[in-house]
Length: 99
Image 1 (tube, one colour):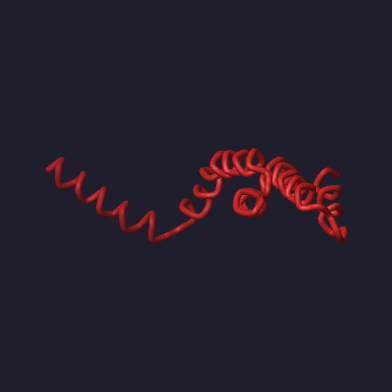
Image 2: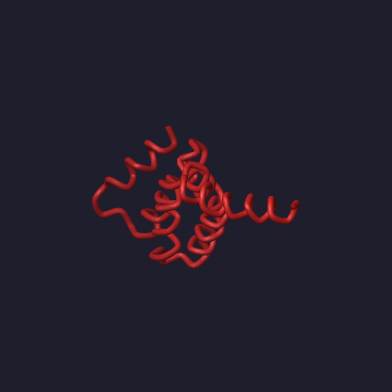
């Protein structure tokens, strides 16, 4: 419901810049609650880069940093090259060290 309200506000023409960026920030929070980290990060990036409100920019950077770790585990965990190449080298090194 909150996300829909923020999205509706963003679709209105002539929305004052400060309100637009607050709506983007609110959308980011709503998306965080839904664990849609990448979408939330995009909103935070836009607010951090373009908002005329210095405090809101700083807040968006903090939120972006807070969710950064949540953006990385899923792709890395599913990535075959990451698990096979370094993992094999580590296992080989360990096996060599044991012998």
